[in-house]
Image 1 (spheres, rainbow, N blue to C red):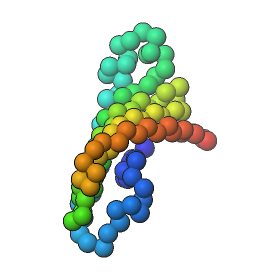
Image 2: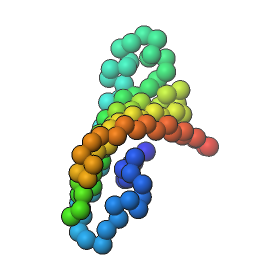
Image 3: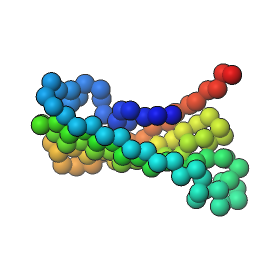
Image 4: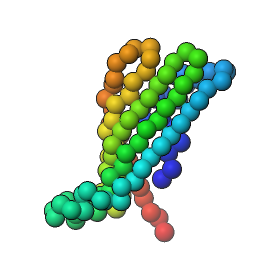
Length: 103
């Protein structure tokens, strides 16, 4: 799944008509760590590391998250921290996703 938006940011919170820079990066580790643990290996989960960033003239917003995808072939769980330059503090977030293959 290609992510093209921040996970914990409300869509219109920092909308702007000014110039902005937006970046998204995700790396799938393909189970390089979890496949080494015998009981966890049966979950078939894969590790994800991601970074989302939005910079406008008014704010700098960043999210860093870790996640597990492909849990039992249909679940995803992400947990991370989001920070912005207005508050100067981090906010924890989590997200649970479901993937259905209807083929």
